[in-house]
Length: 166
Image (cartoon, rainbow, N blue to C red; front, side, top):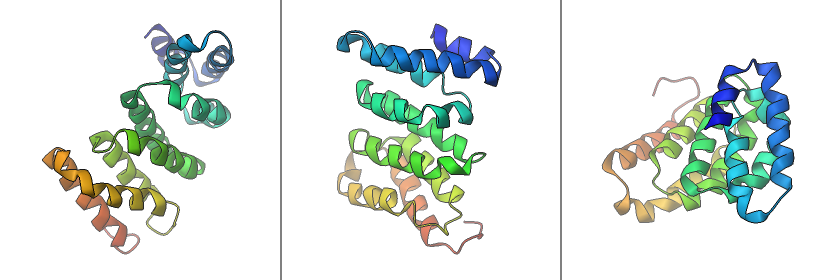
């Protein structure tokens, strides 16, 4: 929590050295402490530039954190895509990696909706993630009703013409 607070308070140019330090720490030390270090690393991803610079480190540390933290990270990256389109494909890869472990997570469904919107429904990049969501409907009986509704809305949005208000 202290690392997250520091990352929020620092200027964007000062966040990167903090994030790089945590990325180095993630690669060192005992494996049983890797989860805590990974959480600290993820908490420094407060600006898209830092996320881009340390993308490989974040992706490699993703399995070290609990599913809910993976889902939060995927949702955070989806937010960055609005202003940093080059994160679209990496964000979709992370979404696909996280979804099987957090099926039915509302934040992930909403994140995928953002990613579909960011692709302006003209790119096929979101296709694998949407297909993964569709295949998960076999387990939708265990999801909250509003999550199922959001997922159906997302599917409908993927077939809407580009630029249409859905």
